[in-house]
Length: 367
Ligand code: DAH
Image: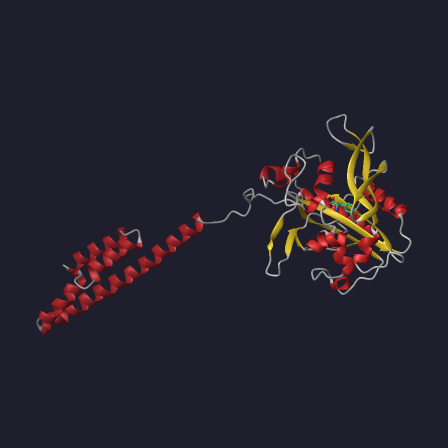
């Protein structure tokens, strides 16, 4: 009877091919009311002779079965682990799944290019906040009280603060001229913030805001401002600096510029600089053709601005300029609509964006 039971249990162990089935066999044999446990319980009711004879047999059966189950359990677990390792193996030779890579926005690329060109000419970079005081954005720059730029429909005004001051989203980067000359800008590096004595040679790349939106205007856009203050500065310095910049930026020596008289409150005389270009083929080619393209505003810093910034106009002179970064980017890289620059369309960004790891252009050193 014991031999038959043992044969049955061994067959069941043999047949169990996963840990759950094996556990069921164990419970059926060695569990509380398992077949072997019942036999063990029956020992108590036997006569001493019977027990002497049956005891070792039943205990032997229990030990053998328990040993076999433990062995089988280890084998099943090892097989399970092997299967898992085989199915979950990582094949390092497979190519990685395609991943979308970010790119440098054309505006940032163009700003970097401009900064590189001006840095080579000895300019440093200054920055100011997007939210500006009326004084820095207008008053110190010699804007009359009733100037149209101060109108609500041209400029984003903030709510009056507790002190009754109405700040603006800066309409141009020119207020940073004031900050640099007056040295009141906490965001500037210490060497500027602690008071910059002329000579001053800075450029100011940054975001600007106006109530405007059409194919060539966006309510937020980028400008780069330039300011040079020294003794004996004149229009010749201004002209050379801007012509050198344009030639390097557009990577051509054939640039021809034209300075047209203009008016800005903060410069006197003021001019707009045009560049000779060819628009005949549907795209703009710089340095050839018979058209002129307006590129930037510039002029000699107005004596009132110097005075407002604590500089004596009889001692110090300077020139300044301001250009639209996005517009120059559009010109250089040929995007059809300025508004696309800020539409955050990933397809556009993939097409017009620049690699962050591009090799530098050997001619300009720019990447
Ligand atoms: N701030 C002017 C604008 O936004 C651009 C400008 C013109 C800046 C002449 C200057 C300048 O520094 O001298 O239209």
